[in-house]
Length: 131
Ligand code: SF4
Ligand code: SF4
Image (tube, rainbow, N blue to C red; front, side, top):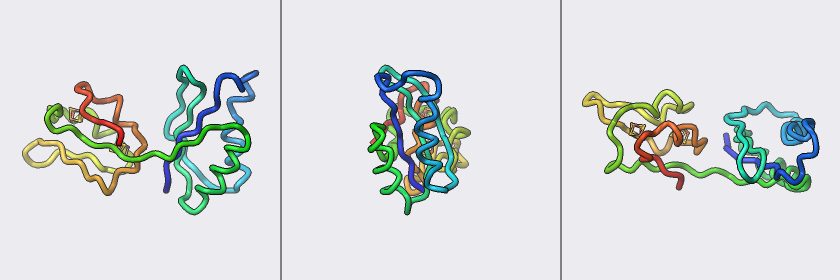
């Protein structure tokens, strides 16, 4: 599984149907995929998508041909100095990379993190950072 962020710049959005441009392009490749997050930002429409590892190159090239900006996501790091072990980030993680241990301290399993960034906005202390 690979997480990519696809961004359709606002300049290319002419009507509502354009929003589905990203999804339609990926569907051409006859794969199953997960949409982890849909958001709009100052730059455009963003979709965080989980696609099969072996299709990453083909799909990325295809999206880029349609002027969709694609970034492969990295992972996150937890700043232990800022973390207060509140656990707010845990339930959002789709891969169980975040846990509280017996002492109620946050444990982060780096190897399980797929960089989806769903936990980022949950942290009240801004202790989670994108690498
Ligand atoms: S970015 Fe956060 S929510 Fe996503 S897999 Fe990594 S630890 Fe879990
Ligand atoms: S949400 Fe932030 S402060 Fe709370 S456990 Fe997670 S990383 Fe630590």
